[in-house]
Each structure stands twice: as structure tokens, then as C-alpha cells.
Image (cartoon, rainbow, N blue to C red; front, side, top):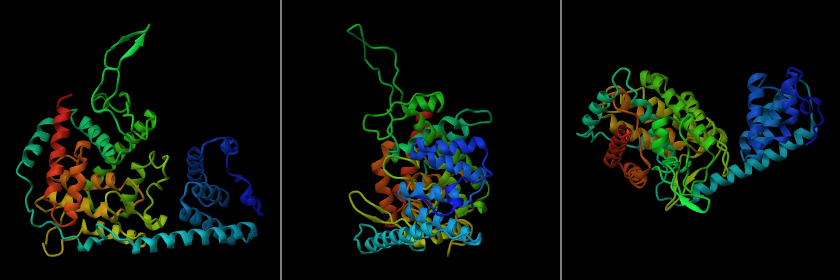
Length: 420
């Protein structure tokens, strides 16, 4: 839309000739590439120039992130006001658009509060810690001993284990669907049907040869089939687990900012998909998004106005004594599996972000396990039905099934990597 003020129509003079030309040619790019380009410009030059703010807001609007677009529009308007610039066309647009977005946000929230749920939202304070599980399951010591034996100094075991983990954590969410085994594909040559050596890719091949060296083969029903994007998502997930190491070393650093950084890393590539846009590292309090987990039954998540406060409370619980037990629940609690189950439950039920919450919860719930010498959580895709059933059981206060689910996933992942 044409604006009255020159500052909203022309790129900042500080932008180099090369970048200015890139912006001029951006109209030929797809929406995803334009968003990434303007993010780069805002990081390189200024995230407070009205021209860049308004262009990014326009694209977020097209991606369906109305509240975030309004925030950027308002930021631009405030900067113009401080500069003594009045743009009536822009002001009229913002007034109309803000009213529309506010109506949509308020309507979705009101509707969610009137809906019926199989499981209603319960704040973290109401989820009783599983003190009835004071010790790890007996077979967990075997997992710990095996892990220590497999990863002595200089061992290459942990890298493929982590690759197995990041593949499975995306498969569980159906981010993409990969073949599990290497298949022999028939090829027609001169009208003869020949069976060449194994040429189809599998999860095992990615684990064995690494993300860059492996070849991606998707199942026909996979929504995402682009090998480049799939590898990028896997590398994003690996990078997120690298961020986890600092939190394992020092849980005092676990706060909302750290969680946002990890989520932004996890969703760097997969935030753009054919269904909707996921604002990476941006909580639902900021996006003002109402989310209901749907399926066989509906599950109510934390109302978006309360998400940030809930996340802060969850982080606080990692650094203070558990109400009546007198133990710090990450540092001294004797059963890290019970702690991990509780962390996972409160995060997935809070649902702090629009998407990526399951992957985030499994990652953060690995902290107590890793502090006690266990590997990070690996829920393999074949466990998916049991995994979701165990979450529902944990919601009702029984974390035993989820503890066994975590242990089984670790065992299966270790066995899979050993077999390579």
C-alpha cells in the first residue's frame, strides 16, 4: 500500500548498494525467502527503522501472524511519532487492521473457554510431583553402565546416538516420514527389470553416515519430501541439543530467554511449512495464539495471556526446593526419570509456543537425566501410541508408564546404534 511519508516508501540510506539491490529484487522471491532477507537486513542494519519494520509486518500478515504484524506496525508508528512524522494513510491502516486482529484474538480465546475438553488446562502448581517414584527403574542402571562403556574418551558412539535421537524426535511429530530400512528398488533397463544394490535411504543410513553424507528417502505419505529441507531441520535439531549442554552444566541459566533460544534453533527451518507459519522463539503470549490440541479428543492448553508467567514459574521450579520435599528437584532428587516425566508433562500441557512443543519438552526434560549420567530422551517413532498414552496417564498423576517409555526408547536407540 502507498504511504504518505517517504521514510516508509524508501529503504534506509545506510543500506549498502548491494543490499539495496537485493531488496529491490525481493519481489521476485517467495514469501519465505523475503522474510529471511528482511530478517537479515534488520539484524545487519537496524531493527528500528520504520521501512524495514513495516515491510516485515506486511509479510507476517500474509503468513497469518497478525498480532506480531500489529506489534511491528505499532513499533514503526511510535518511531515515526518520536521523529515528528505523521503518516495518515499508515495510521488509518493500522487502526483498522489492529481492530480486526484484536477481534480475531478475543473471539478465539472466548470460544476456547466455552469449549468442552477431555483434559482441561491445569497450571503447573496443580501437577503433583511424582514423589511416589523415589528411585529410578531397576533396569536403568544397565542403560547407564552400557552408555558409559560405549562412550569412553575418543569414542564415536554418542554422535550417531544423537543423530538417531534428532531423527526420531522429528518422526514422532510427523515433521517428515523416512523409510526405516534400506529397500532394494527395481529399475527398468532396456525393458528388463533389474535389482541394483541398495539405493534407497533409511533412518539407519542417516545415523550411520551422518546428516550431510546420508541420502534422504521419504515414505509416500510424508508431507515434507525435500531432502535439503529435511537435512536442514535435522541440523537445526542437533544445534538445539548442543545448546542443552550449558543448561545441564548450570541449571541456573534455565530461564525463558534460554527456552526461547532453543525453540528458535529447533524451528529455524521448519517454521515455514505448507500448513502455517511458526514464529520461532516467540511464545504464545507474544503471538496471542489460542491453541487446542485436537485429535480423538480435545486437550486444553495454557491460555495465551498466562503462558509467559507459566514458563517463568516452570523455570523457577528448576532452581528452588520442591515445596515439601526439601530437595532441589534437578540437583538432588534421586529419580531423574520421574523428574524428566514431570518436566515433560508440564511443558507439553502448557504448550508455550505455537508448534514444536513436543520436541522442546523432550529436549529440556533430558536435563535431569543427563546430569545423572543417562543419555538424553529418545522416543522412537514406533513408540508413538504408547508415548501419547503415557502423557495422558501422567496428566492424571501416574508417571510410571512415561518413565518406562523413556527407558525403552533409550534402550532401543542404543541397540540401534550398536547394530550399525
